[in-house]
Length: 216
Image: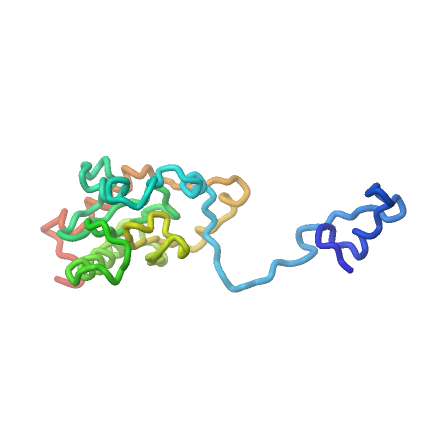
């Protein structure tokens, strides 16, 4: 029988009575490539810098509106709240713990958790702001692609499940590189405030002289 801890056949049974090592059966050290990782076909975007948030920092104490950061952000200035754009029913804000530079979230003003509970006006504006966010990030940062996602419920990965939000994550080829893995560090080459300023300046409503993509 193989011992999963050492990878050697019978290694667990080779110890002398009392648990002392048996010199005739020395322990072996398994090399990392001894068992190649099973390829499940999935890419992984390593983000260990987010562990401080996953550990509870800046998370609301409960699901009430008074504890909700997404409800408080619109009361702040755009600069302080990292808001890129404001609509009638929803707004666009930079993620404080980004997966990648330019990681945006589209958030309804109303404190609502379930996507099916959005009004028609909220649903339409969240969709339109998501499209505009992609166009603006594409124009400013030229990503190779995007991940769009809305986690519904804590079990689905929502960090703040009580107030739904749509993620817009720009992706570049090679963005899942070695640095977060070996150095526990994610390279974000620009301050969030600077990213917000560049995206806000490129947002169509901030530049009335330049029509939104597809409307010219």
